[in-house]
Amino acid sequence: MRIRIVDAFTDRPFSGNPAGVLLLDSFPEDAWLQKVAAEVNLSETAFAHPLPAGGEADWALRWFTPTTEVDMCGHATLATAHVLHTTGAATGTVRFAARCGVLGATAEADGTITMDFPTSPLTPVPCPDGLEKALGAEVVAVHDTGAHIGDLVVELRDEAAVRSLAPDLAVLKTMSSRGTIVTAAAERPDGGYDFVSRGFFPAVGIDEDPVTGSAHTALAPYWSARFGRDELTGLQGGARTGLVRTRLRGDRTLLGGRAVTVIEGDLHA
Picture (cartoon, helix red, strand yellow):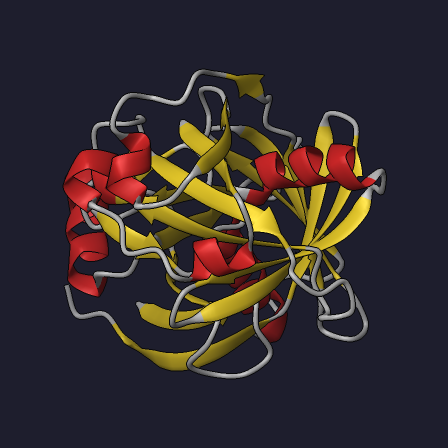
């Protein structure tokens, strides 16, 4: 079996967010998938297999962190679509059947892949006790993102506060079912992005995720409402960053980015 490591939401190696991608004939038992994801030891490993023609989707898709399966993942979906298109296994739009529903991924002529995801609901909630202390920063607002993502979106005062975070991950682990997305408006309107974010997911075995596509299904409606524009660009990450282009379409959010395959080899398990 061929296994690949793909850097997503970037156009150059060793940046963006790496994901493992394994194309299969069918899904074996869950325990084997989890062991492979633990061996790859990236924030997500994607497993996909083709579906019979004529259905609502073309490929079945699942995502595993090193410790658990998740309902939704953007960067590993982008990585999978990139592998399908660069290997000739698919052209045009690919429809994936996943735990969160059917997701589309369309390859553009310039190499960008645009993904069609459900928009995450945003519910204002009080700032949890201990959150400001765990972040070491003043919290402006907190929103819950609903069941499929299970994150808290936390707005901070400015971009500098987001970039300088060194949070207490043991405390953040108790704050939500998946993670904490910390965000702020971009400091410079001409800097090539509209907002910044960082994502911390210790509850699912990921201290910090460089570029979390699924989080942008919540960040897109959050910042689109603030800026009054449906099309935005987000910059996510700490030491390693990537850009996510978002287009809000009501109950769907389009996520755009590029990807690069950096490692390809054989899995002997």
